[in-house]
Image (cartoon, rainbow, N blue to C red; front, side, top):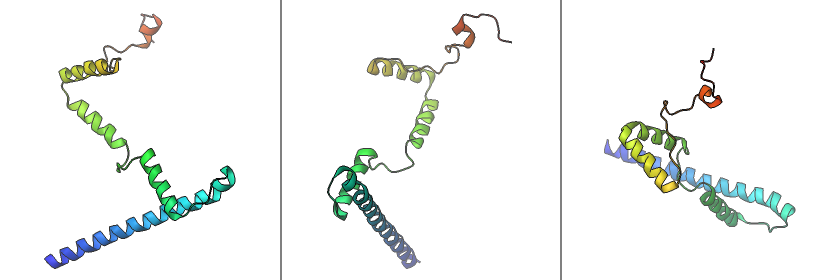
Length: 129
């Protein structure tokens, strides 16, 4: 039984490594082909080889997205909302004050009683019908 589990893990690791190698080759080749098709004619830049294309891809990855992985910022936004919901009103107010102190502007209030209604904005005190 242990032998089968080891074989499965070894196959899984080998499969992941193979996918990574194929991905690196594919993206490097794609960058090289696109660069060589567009950049020399358009901007009179030199033709690049695979290794330069791979370096260019890595540089673009670092500059524009980093190596954070995951689905992007959606999970961070959800984690932020969950963290805010778990805070007590006193902790939320303390956070707002600290935000205002550090950034020079107050943190937006989420209180409904502080919100401006359309009737108070226009000066109309009669209820809308």
